[in-house]
Length: 182
Length: 405
Image 1 (cartoon, rainbow over the protein chains, first blue to last red):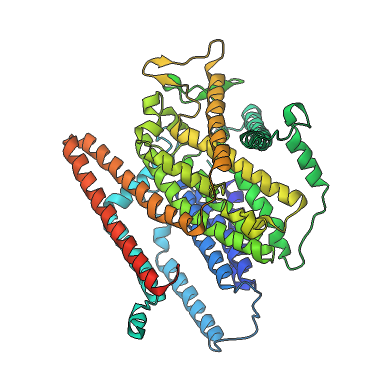
Image 2 (cartoon, rainbow over the protein chains, first blue to last red; image 1 turned 135 degrees about the vertical axis):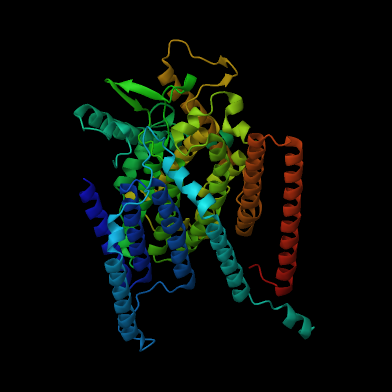
């Protein structure tokens, strides 16, 4: 059963991931991304990480890809791209080099750290009758707001800085021009 | 291990499997019937408010009008516009229809929640809950589903390959994403008091009227939730998505036949589900009305069935309120809609959540409740003034630049 679920979810993830890079239409590519994110959510549920699965769907599928689509529609770039024309001629060979490098790093990480894969850590508390239905969420909340609270808060500050920076850069204040023209 | 229903956890037997299948079928049929009756109820109630008769030909009181309309829509021509994106165009109605039904699965539809009973009933010797699924993430599931529902509307408008539906869908996505934040934040106050995410747990924590979350969270989260839910449903006064005077018909202009019917069905189904969710979160769901030790008990009815009756009665009130909104409130302008969402509801719900959290902390640590309340009020007023200063500064800058955005 678990293998079957894993197989289906893995298939969803792979089909979606391949779709993101091969579909020539931006909206179709974004929808393929949704498929991948759902596959990841299914894998989380299969591992009893229900809270992560819910957050995965709410944040990634429900907000981030919706914003992608929103931008695609608003900017009017929602038409089929010709994949043969090349705006940056060096980008394809560079992409090959970068992806080969990434594969190399991942393989190296897995081979050197293969011992860690077999050791089991504390793991997620599986919510059942003995632990209560919220065990999973409680465990996550405790680690976020005690052990990793600094990292958590710093990340949120980083996001705020990014948002404020984007607003500042994208918004041209014309007030100076108006005053000089008067 | 993966099962969401406790019946399916251990060795799989026929009886539990049949019970779960039966629940699925019953929830689906109840959902369809409720939607059908809701469409009739809305037309009839609005007709009453506007001094009309409303549907009265098909069946007693015109109650079968929706069925007749549905059959008629089946036989209409199914148009696909030439410039549409065929695959997405066909997919979109299902993306909006399926989430509408999925969200209904986590609503406790009955059962006995009194005296610490967890709403469990025994059917054919198996203990189960009168709800299709009680996942550990509970209400987060409803939030996830409502964020998925955006796709149906958004893709419907985009894939039509036509201007007005596109405008409708861009409005829809902006509106639903911004009101989801207020929805989630007002929900957080409820979760803070209930201490659990599971819907049956939230219902079980609201035994008497003073423990109903509408009272114990201090009314504000309920108001915010109601407004945000109305916006999330794209119902009047927040129906800019299908503002017929401006957008012909909105995101579903190019749809006809059964595809249109699916959107229509999803919209009303969502209204029913959202009303049931409001009742579950704020009004005790299937709990009877009770003051202290006094309980309004309906004689001769078993307690579990009584739960269904109470839920139905409470949901009906909210369905009526939604119809009332539609009949009486004028539609908001788009900038008013965004201002209400971002400048009033989100800061308001966040502030109220912090206030509730500080109260709870004070009670746990035996701090002086007056000092805590006073200082939190001071902090909130300071935040409010800062926010107002920011708004007036941005309004002044906008005036200089001479643009709305």
